[in-house]
Length: 145
Image 1 (cartoon, rainbow, N blue to C red):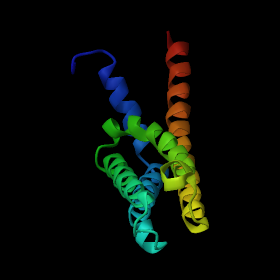
Image 2: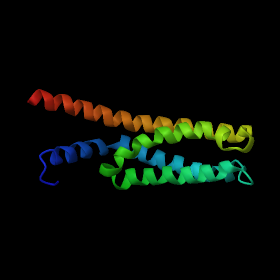
Image 3: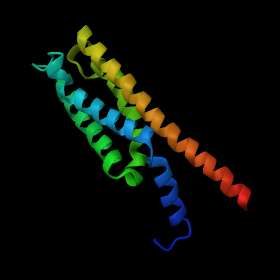
């Protein structure tokens, strides 16, 4: 695989994409969002007898691991950025789906909807950065042929 003609170009593209302050900021925001999501049942005080506690804890850990992966191995984990969108959408609808009786307190709903919008926005930002870079590179490569 290392001898593949496109391997060097792909490494160069990911190096350009992951360098700079924008990507570092997104990595940190993804990790912070995940950490807050994991501890939010105890911050908002809905941890006793609520099924949303397990949901938030598991997805918070998942977001934190994705953020850590983006920070530690950006060239490999960058493709996982799209996962933030479905996780964010799930967080928006989860208070009604996961809760017994399909209803949740206003604090749980507001917390999960806010985190869901943040996660979705971060995922779209990562996808946008990948698409912008990929699209620009494709046009340049096509023009050179």
